[in-house]
Length: 176
Image (cartoon, rainbow, N blue to C red; front, side, top):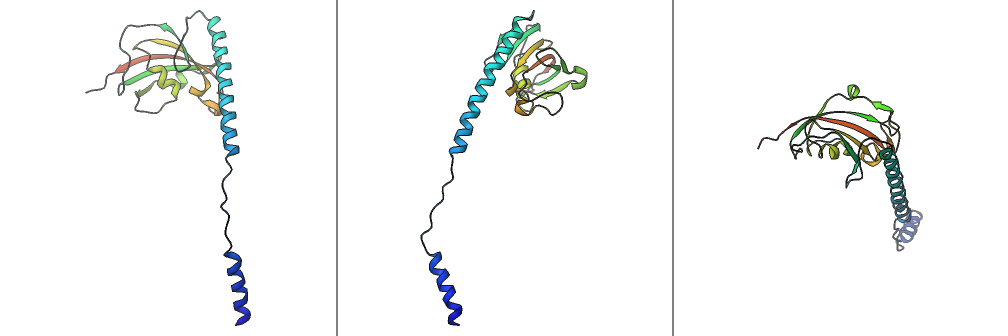
């Protein structure tokens, strides 16, 4: 019995030593976030230069939005812009900045959604909000508003800025 108690007492005394608190190392996380922010700023600047070059070679007159995308009216209409809760119907096509068609209007079909109440890629959500019914607008969207660093897994590459041509077909006002 003594031989049995001796190892147990020994283990008890060893385990009763003061334990050290191990703190997680955040150096890698902080460094990653800092490097990621620098990469994103550089990517944004590169994409803005691409937009400037595209606009310079275009017959359309482009405006720059506060969100970093560029837009030009093919068809400008006087009217009402959609508000939160309005249902909008639109068609669109997606091209790269070399005007190569990635997705046609036929492939994408007509899209209907409620403003600020349904989830779409940020490019579409923000672009539609500045349009009026029956307008056709060409947008140059930075990659972070489109499909970001992952692309769409098919035709759109990672970190690819895109040209969208959107036709806002209908705005159905929210019933109050």
